[in-house]
Length: 289
Image (cartoon, rainbow, N blue to C red):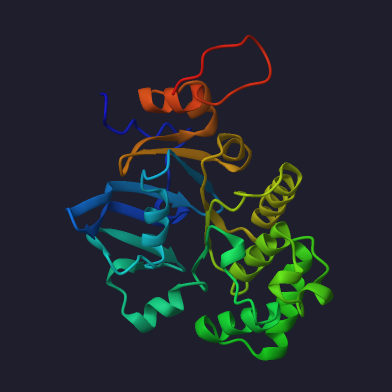
């Protein structure tokens, strides 16, 4: 039915122990001068261990707000009005929405981390990379400083950087692509089981985008974390996703395996979104605007 979410067309049923994160009937509202604005409207989905879900949709559809809600980092004018965010690990289940501030601090980065949009704005310009990594570890974990530095060096190497040079560099000494990879390494310092990435390839050149995508794919295979990837770029979504969720007006209107969404989309908005992407091969066709 038009306007309703299409069923999740997955190949096999999901066992409860495969699901690490469940979002249930989540609604988020912003307080504005003209009243309440519902940015996320009754969203539900499951994320499995080691799975990658990509959220696609136009600007303002609620993708970033959904990601910020999961780690409870919404701006002051936003509130979770209803719903649950259930995180499962080692046989226990917690509702992130009801966590106390102290427990929430432990949850962030140790269980679920987020790489924010705009690497150029994510760093303190007067602190070296290591100082900012150590601040993250002190705030959210309990690792000794020597072990933490070794972990940081290991992760910087895994994201294809020169670890001993980069760890003592200032942010302005790094390119945009290098800063983005440092952010990815920083997000993995405490070995989270869920990683949320908000437009990590935005404002990067094509070759650097390819490097970031390959780094993420390899890290996911080696470390085994689940990933929620937020993007406007459907080509990137096709590269990284196991499943794609299309968002429109605060709702997930369709979710399914990447091949189904790209080649057999059931919702008119998903079809229009894919048709709006220009192609350099095949016959020329009018773009959908």
